[in-house]
Length: 465
Image (cartoon, rainbow, N blue to C red; front, side, top):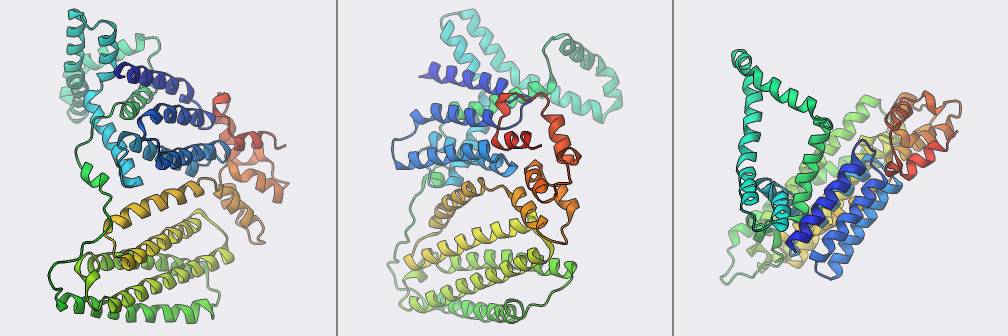
């Protein structure tokens, strides 16, 4: 098993080395994802959770192949991190825990960078005393050597006299690497990065730190044995009553002047209206969830007059939902008047995630669940949301929306990625793709790309006249 893992590790490292260097992200990432999932599958329990996670990762890889936006690539990396973390610790309780397990395992493996090489040599000649000593020397020397080079460069830059005295060392290193025929600093860094990450995939260091936290799936609250005091109940009730009254006045103004009597304003005023509303939403939701978690973390869930407190809490959550509606209307009006942008889409995404958070906090209060439930449920819900978002071509949507407007900001549309080019040519046929900076950059970068960089978006772009 040990040798099999080592062989799999080096096979993936060699694959990574050849399919990603100086290539665009496309078919290569899809193939590499499938390869990693195939090697990780034997470590996973054979249950529905494994099936769902593998399907999620595979669909995310498909989104890179078909949509190939920066968002889809980033989300694929995050989702793959969750799945690999799950393979390392199948008992994880949430998507965030899985991602953290994978990250921590990568960090832990930095202490054992020579382990894969040692395993190979030990497998070839386990009884060789000379080879054993060589491996031992390599293990002992690698960290001191790295630290020596790092601090040598730091001190040379900090002290000109020290630089002058030790310049011969720097020259010796430069001469060695220049004479080394295939050496390349960027490619070496690229390879070392892949080596470190893949070590975190294949060599599980049996995480101890925080393992109880990552695997705790208890979501229920135990009823207290003793009688619950009224002071905390009164404090919670008065607090939620005051907060409801305060937010009610804000929502009343928004409903009166924004929902039903909105008048157009300047771009600057509208921008301020949307941004201030978004900031208010962020602060309000954070405070709301914090307050509700504090009040409903334990005994108050079982107070004899709990229904009254729950009613105030639900009203507070409902008012936050109305506040979200106000921010959505502000953002919608902003888009309607001045067009769509990435930031305005970002507001919609944040609103969606906030609504998920409000739903889960409502369920927590009604069902008397603990904060662990919020952490677990929201992480999986957010992961599903991110999977859906990875199939959305945002630049295409922005271009489609804005180019239909008579007052379209063409400079902004032209600044979008190559994903917007087919839409630009649809509405502005006089604009040639060769005249757009995004296409010029794409042509320059893609000269040396091979079939490994293939993706559907590039294929469509190349077939546009």
